[in-house]
Length: 231
Ligand SMILES: N[C@@H](CCC(=O)N[C@@H](CS)C(=O)NCC(=O)O)C(=O)O
Image 1 (spheres, protein in one colour):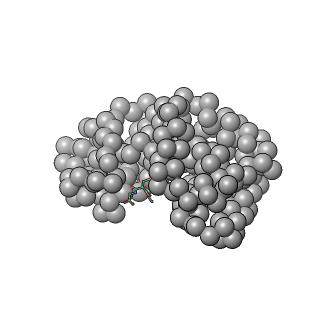
Image 2 (cartoon, helix red, strand yellow):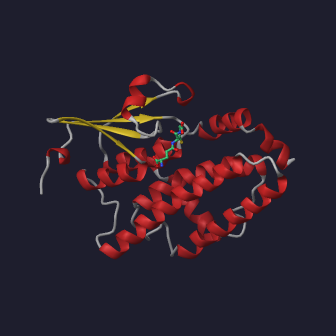
C-alpha cells in the first residue's frame, strides 16, 4: 500500500549534539544520502514547541512534512526504520526476514545497554558501581559472541545495527576513559568492530571530532561523583 508518508517533502531532525540516540538517526540519514535539517535544542531548557511535538520530551524527533501536513516521529529505532523503509540508497537491513528480526533485536540491545550505562552514571556507591560495571562487561561479552568476521555486524554490509552501536561505542569510550571501566579489554572482535565503525564517514559526521571533548566536559559537570569513584 502506498501512502503520502512514503514520499516526505522534507525531514527535520530535532537533536542534541551529545545524544547517541540522535546520532544513530543521523548515521542512517547520511548512509542513505538524504537531505535533512538538523535543529539542536537545549535539553535543560526545552522550548515549548518541542514539548508539544515530543510526547516524552526526548530527542530525537523526526518531523516529516508531506502534502498532508506534518508528523512528528519519536523513538530513534522507529525513526531509523522509517528512514530505511522510505528512502533509497544503500539497504540498511538484511533482505531475509529472520535476519532482519535478529538485527532489530540487536538494535534494541544497543538501546538497552545505553540505559544500563546511565544507571551506572547516577551511582554514588562503589560496590553498586562495580556490580553494574560487571553487568556491562557481561553484556558486551554477548555482543562479542554475536559478531562474525566483520568488518561490520553483518559482514560487509553496513546496517542499522552498526548505526546504533557506533555512537554507543563513542559514548562508552569517553566514559571508560574517565572511570576506567575496562569493558573492552578482553573483547577483540568488539574492539575491531568499534575501530571500523569509527572510520565510517557517516559516523564521523554524526558524532563529530569534538565529541569526546564535549561529552567529557558534560560528564565532569553533571557526574562529578564518578571521578571520585574512579580515583
Ligand atoms: N528511547 C529514546 C531515548 C531518547 C533519549 O533518552 N534522549 C535523551 C537525550 S540522549 C533525552 O532527550 N533526554 C531528555 C530528557 O529525558 O529529559 C529513543 O531511542 O529515542
